[in-house]
Image (tube, rainbow, N blue to C red; front, side, top):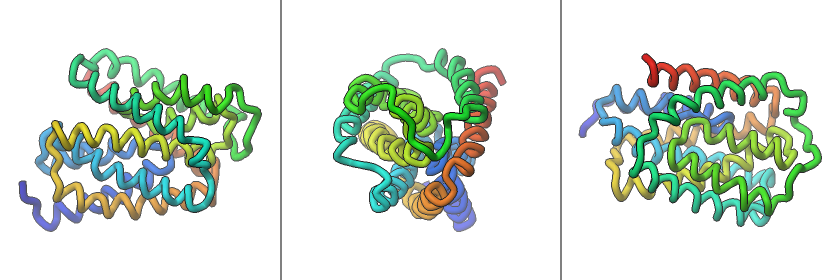
Length: 252
């Protein structure tokens, strides 16, 4: 499929915005997927192409956080493996069953998460006492986070950040940075399935990859500079926007 200069420019600009949003709160796919469909891609091709460009965004943010020593990769090795395994299983299961029931349930979860981010006094820049050990978190929490991203996806970055805050006591900037590492791992796992079985539009994907790089870099820098002052309102807005979007798909 061929695109005109105007469409490619639009995809590039949209990818910058989506990369910025995704680096801070997740949910960038809600911006890029509709635009890809409007550009003429089939829903399957739009999902596959979105995973390609989205993986670059999460990789860019992840590398920035690693360079700034916001994350400890050695400590995260088990969580990375468990997330990848969960995502592979989720991607496989997605091809086997109907996800309509999850579309109905998910808006309620997203609204609750948005309200928690909005009103909880415990979500700030400071680390708190952990409720479970890192090993337990990796073994019993991250496989389900990876599974969810491979199986369905919307809000994965926010769910991951919330898990780091609630269970490991991380401050919000640190939680968001660590969540981005796991989000990249689950994205790559899902992307491998789409490359093999899906229909990636490489032209649109590569153009949007550059936009994602710019947006993700800007978002990652703003996270470390502004902390929870920036992250909380963006997460809340994304959660409510995703809820409305999913409710419209289910009942509209």
